Figure 1 (cartoon, rainbow over the protein chains, first blue to last red):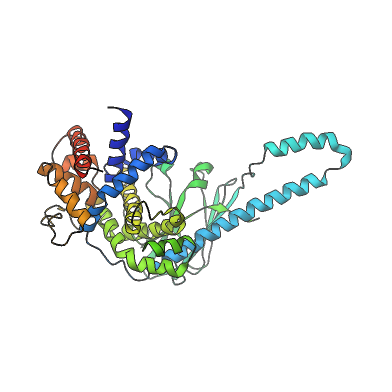
Figure 2: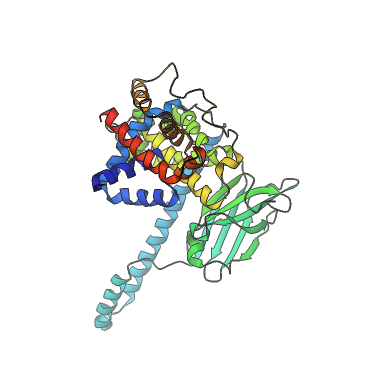
Length: 238
Length: 177
């Protein structure tokens, strides 16, 4: 098989959808830098697209659009606070540079080189995540200190429902993909704390956290069973 | 819809609401058929519209119709989820409302009302052997992996892989594009 045919078949199977999880993510990554592959996938998507006409439309439940708008607003807020944190670090660095006196010019030069070398923002240790679907649904505020590995979660507007409880989950591809329980969340406005000693801070930082509504006592299956919402950590504004 | 999508690229929220109203049942149908479970499909649908909002600037009306562009995002996201779930959790179809999918619709390609492009594609698909045609249709509409096709059609994965490659190359030649 020549390389051209190879790309063609890979693109066709990606567009058709028959590749497994690992192959799909490898093709998705490769198309970012391989324009021939990217173009071939688009062509195949176009060839097969008429088949979508044969799939019956299904009306999603009302209220979903409001939740989409909330997700977009939350993502926007997360981006903004990330930008603010970086801006804050830059001004700190500027301030530090200004504080150096002319007498230490030689040292300053050396340091400036050092500063340039360390232009990457310092790794923050304190992270937060906000869980909220829309104004009517419960909200939770989660914070994690990666240094002490202490996680705190507080219901902000969660109405405890009779016979139900909220359960906290962590999921990461590095943890096998399936959500793992971090325990039940105390009702009312109290803070629930957990020490994540079993988890690598690097994994925690990238992980997805989820809160699901479960029967009293927690999920009977060890996996989220009820309606859930998800959030990822962002650095806490300092 | 292409005009709406171009307005969405300029962060026009009202256009986004109109786009959602015009397209959500199509995309939800596609996602639900692949993922079977409403709770999972709703979550993915939300994610798909977040992506549409964020990536609308990438949409090029010369390359593909708006609905095809959005459907590709929806299908890819649903397929990723189906494959991810198959690795980490129980097989998606364990909870499926519809287990026997092919026989559910008499023949998905025989509908009376078809667009010209679908009629053309159906002609080419109908030139394939029946089980190969079913394989392609099942993979596209229901999101079957090679592994699942192998179980479903009671053939080794290697055979499915060969069938897929031959069928797709034959299809491309027939469509002549």
